[in-house]
Length: 235
Ligand code: FES
Image (cartoon, rainbow, N blue to C red; front, side, top):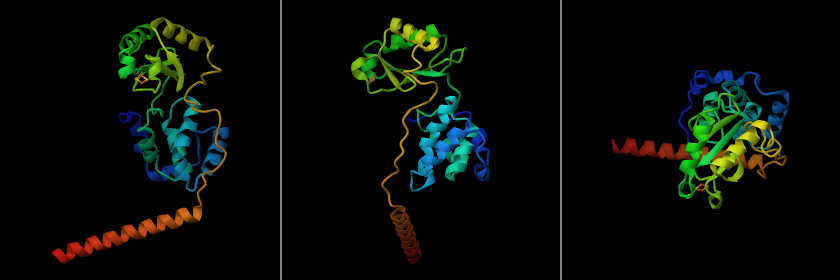
């Protein structure tokens, strides 16, 4: 599922590519060390772009323009390319969100089991429309497409953790537990996707990757030359 272009994008897009080579200034020392370990797992630094977005997002729950610029510098792309990638995925936030993002599915199985009524209740009890964040900054409510939990419809997730079928009453209890911190062990704050990080690299031979890239570039060049010769012959 794709997202609309974020309003925060202009700040990133307005920077030129040269700024991406600046020293990281937003990622914490721990995140920066983790980022370098993640990059080392891949044949090419840019392949680590999405894992680094998740890593940066776990700091504040969303990808700030500064974080995207840091990531760009680390993997050798422009900040606009980081934004272009991050804004495509629902699990990456390019605008501020609450400590807990509560996703209510309104796809067909959930809709048939009361999702519309549940969403209406959630909006009313939280005092925000879907897409909004409560004034205390704790809850962002969002409407989601199928969350692959159809047998527990109408279902919900909090920060990408399944919290099962919900009724208006259980939803209110869930929100109270989130606010009190009673679910903090089970559901990490912000966008922390995983607490276990991969430490083994891809089984890819870097020399082979380079050779295949060169062969592909050669083939592209030959196709372009053939196309050009055909066009000249026809004129
Ligand atoms: S339709 Fe709601 S989880 Fe599939």
